[in-house]
Length: 328
Image (cartoon, rainbow, N blue to C red):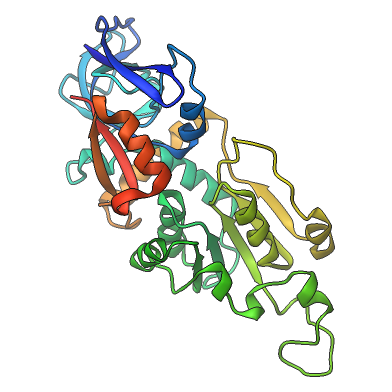
């Protein structure tokens, strides 16, 4: 079978390897698509020979171990597992769910959606119709916007440095969209605002509870995006960090965060079985149209084009939102 293997930074090759064997408790899955995740972009830029990428696979059961129940050959499945840039992968039944008939394979790439749903659990809606801001409107930010809409948030304000991303945010449920430099004054509670005359009542100091948002989600993965998200939180508000900050250290104004008495929540999840438990629920939400987040994967690559896909993801080239590698 074919498999993508790294030969060095930003450079992969497709090699022939044996189809893996399974135990009595595993599934052999013929992969149709493996999603491209931005969390793997930086590791790809510094990759060592022999490294494998791809952890967002969907496909068809090719063989079942004799102890496996609930699955049969020919079932369409999606789930959690690594090394997915290949024609066949071994998957654990407890980390796999069926794909509903009304979902396309490329819409059933479940791993990133499990990350979003687990983030939503950490940022629960406390009051129906409450407002929220999302900073960063790439694939994950768009998914969060659509999920917040499904959860019952009211005003959903989206911020990004790209106008194209803001157009996408409107498509998935944002009620207001802004470039950072266009944000209204009343949406930013920074040191300038804290010491300034009140924005609504001339002659008074700023009402720190009337500026900013009670809920802010960051999905930029950059220091500047993290700083802006922190500035948009109101006093005693909360900020969820969903961006993947894995390329270098971050310098933030924690003095400001401390003054605001704001909550900061790391919205990433490391309990793989917890995320696996969310996958079936996600398939239900998508198939019933409760979570309206399909038709988003808009760039498809062959195994040989993996590096091209990573480069286009880096540059958001040609309207890139979400990429996937066709593996069969």
